[in-house]
Amino acid sequence: MKSAKIMLACLACVTVVGGALALNARRFTGYPVWRTTDYITTVANGKTYATYGFFYTGTGTTLFISTTGTLSTVYRTTISLPPVPVIGTATDGSGFTAAIFTYPVTLTTTRVVTYF
Image (cartoon, rainbow, N blue to C red; front, side):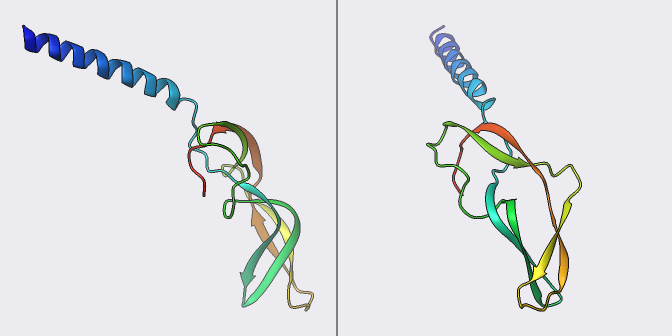
């Protein structure tokens, strides 16, 4: 009887903790956070091409400064959509151009899990 009470108490604790975790898990999304950048580059046939404007990248510093777990508005990719071509100009001054493909993004609200 005593072991049954202990097992019942453990089950109740696990249920409460699991419920709390499940409630908080819904607030986080699995979307990678993207940040804004002033240019994007690519290398093709040994030449570096760059284009300047308002673009998004998944590398570098985060878009936001926030405390872990704080609700933040961030950008995420719409990778299910086709990439959009933009024209990049050779950085060596030759005037050559090449298409650089980038994905559009949308705003989403998520809680910050980690910084990258």
